[in-house]
Image (cartoon, rainbow, N blue to C red; front, side, top):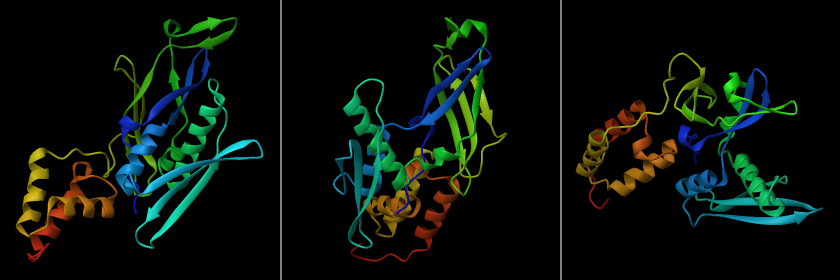
Length: 235
């Protein structure tokens, strides 16, 4: 089953290093994002997590039920301590790492080196150690067919664009279908006795996303398929 790519709204920015001329950023996802995608992809009752202490290190195993082979598929990884709560930090980190092994958010590994220029008003210098209070957000992201990041726009907490990768959006960038397009897809499918629930399942299985998250090309593919479909009773 395909696991969809992360949306811009699901990616967080963390300041990794601050110098006199600027700062570097890391892109990451949180555990809530992982749980959301697990629910969407496999169903809330078709995945589970467990934790084991091995040689003093906390490991997490995430198991998902594969309907095609009718077996549980398990991925495991170890966590590291956080700067706040030791046990909670290890549990959360090991869970996120195990989800990376499943393929959730693995596209973040293709992120470029991100350097943000800062002016003096955005810097604090405490005994020669620089820091900044500026917060950053991923405003836009796009991927190529190999699930690699090829488009990235980062803004600050004032909405100002601070970093840009790529001059134009790739073919499979995030496209939000209009309500009329979504209704049209359900209507065409319904005319062929295909319920909206079946449409949702077919889209999820083929593209790993919801109907509203389809690209225009994917939408046209599904629409053409339903238009050519012979209506079958009992569906």
